[in-house]
Picture: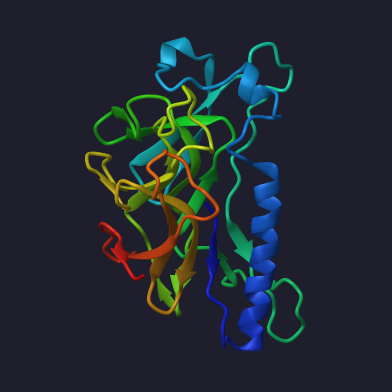
Length: 266
């Protein structure tokens, strides 16, 4: 779930920055998806709802640095049997260059870089079934989830410097958008299920569900003036464990200065 900033009534210079950022987001989305590499894969090589890590052919990628000095992340991917395309991709970043206010070209000033959502970098899922959390200070390895899930996005404290309204900003928590339950009882975990949103503390000792049980996150926006994340979610009104076009959309929000369960706006 990618975040987009609210752009109504913004100055033209800031609007240009956001358009540039939106371009980068689209490019990233084209390269990463929670779906398998083709429609055929979801039927031939599905992720079963009761699968365990031992039942799945999985692999790890590189160690991911975070803005928390002692915390490192290790991604775990599902490998499609018999594929020659299972090459671990390099982890990217959402740290991008702003446009120069005068020329409209990418700024050469080192200070004119930022994360799309200030202080938070993101790992976008492509067959990503879990993420390991390693604490260098205690040599403790834990996982964000106890069984395989499909991770859409994992937001983590960015390692590069960032600011919000000219003030340095840093984060000490994690957010995840995932499909972690076979909610529609079709024996698969995929994008037809309800998408959950979770908050994790920096030590990965507490996990908090941000949305009520029968809501499925569909998109989010970021309010830079108030450092708030808005979560748009569909309500599973007919209780069939999936979202329908006719089902109502509600808006929730969380304060990123002190994340907790999302509050409903409408």
